[in-house]
Image 1 (cartoon, one colour):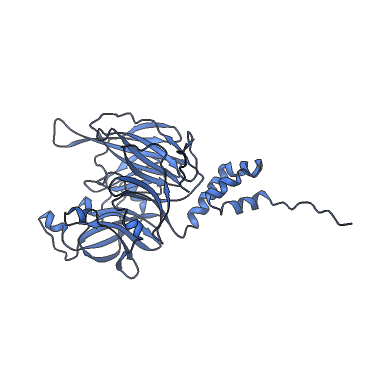
Image 2 (tube, rainbow, N blue to C red):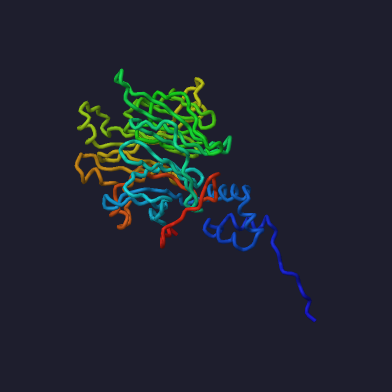
Length: 401
């Protein structure tokens, strides 16, 4: 008579170790296996383990990008950095209509984007969204709804309080002087409220903050570098740049979980006084890394920068975006000869930090035809869900995976 053996079982720890290695879409399907698996996958500890595994094992970084197709339809997509292949077109969790939609930032799988309502009257709705689990929320309106105020936004993660925060810097003309008036508020997902902070003295020069690193939102302002401590909720405008530069020729970039800055300068080192002629000169990219981010909190700590490399691009360009990917600096640039064709002639350039050389990256045909790139942020697929998140109701037949 054959011996009846019990069904083999796996420990919860081993099941967890297996599941965290799967794509989020598969993990969500496994919620249906049994109540124990559902409970495991919903557990905050498992959610953090999955996120940590995704961040530490990501060999092909993913970006979330927005771009116009034929200058009309705006498309949101996921792009693999190494292959430059679009792996998915996404559906944003609202009916876009004729509104202007801008990606503010991405942190731990949560994407923040702004929808300009009745553009250009400067009122905006701000959404937080996790595309992987198809859940989102419309956050409360910021208190200052004056139509003439322009908004400049930032989004990031505060690792000290385990909180996701949105910062909105507002600017409007002053009736009594040539200077603009600035105001700022910060929204906390933990508290679900906006709180006014001390008025800033500068605004991000390119519309939104460039990056969020280690709990600091950083950007090039109109008058220099600016940062915002998400935990202390204070601005710092005292961080000195390695060289004096125009605000539209520099970008703050994340490098090895710290701060770096890319600056365009004339390849000939000539200073052209006519700004139109200056922009038509060949450029080179200079890169510095910040030695210690302690200076970003202020308190009199002086910034120290180390020169990483200088690479001749051998063309007149405008710097749009920049990200590090596997030791290479990935730049999104566009032409700069003031023609409509050049203005929409976007190129990807890879700058090899070790070889100190730059090369244009060829794009797939279907990507090249979908030009006019708007926003690009690093994206990590995760199970993170925030208080107030609701399931996205997709249109009939709509599926982004």
